[in-house]
Image (tube, rainbow, N blue to C red; front, side, top):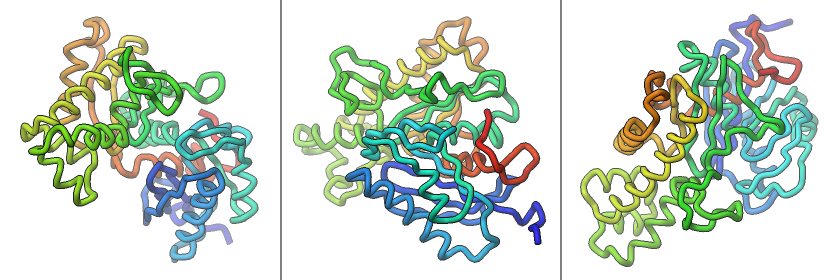
Length: 331
């Protein structure tokens, strides 16, 4: 017997650099339950196994209606049409993985995949800023950095679904070596791991820094750095100034190039309101007037910043009729 529409659910799976979040989502966009699982990504095999284990573990504990489909947001280069996880530096995917066929065989459910930031952007388009604007960019700043571009209500993908690699734009001509092999990339300065790496490298020169305490306790993260900067810690302020300028340059270039109505931030690094304010001020101070005049807002995601990727992955499975999809999403 077919379940009523309001009882139909899908799974949204957000594969992140440090965690995998799996959520049971109604076709109207409500997360009924969600749980985080660790990401093991020392090798391609471990990354795939982490994904399989996270979904399997969630389903074993889930006591609601069975899902109709699984949507997954993955890091890296994703062939969303053919269901292939092509490549990912962060997940050590070095050879194409037919991940959709692997998971459909394991779970006997339709599986849909896309890039994780594309998923977050789709969620923002369906449930967030997209309800009031057809022209926006969503910039996700976490371990990695990328953006989703929505023009006239549609996601811009590029020729190979790789549009939006903002994190690998050069913002420092003499900058650090990035994992991609080039120098001065935005991600190598403002990504969550990069911020922590900067703090750890510089701590010996700042023995009085308040960041020594969270470092010794194993609790050093981007929010701790920005809170210390707000309190006047000299080390944290140096890191925050560099990060503000780097991200600000990236966003200003993006705004001048694309002429968006809204700039929306997501990701763990942007949960700190003080840092968001610093970046917002830089953008307002440095963007071309003709572009700035049409920017209605620079804000965080209208959906829950921690769940936007899970929502978006679930959206991959839901059609315009509010029912689970049987074909790949077409946006």
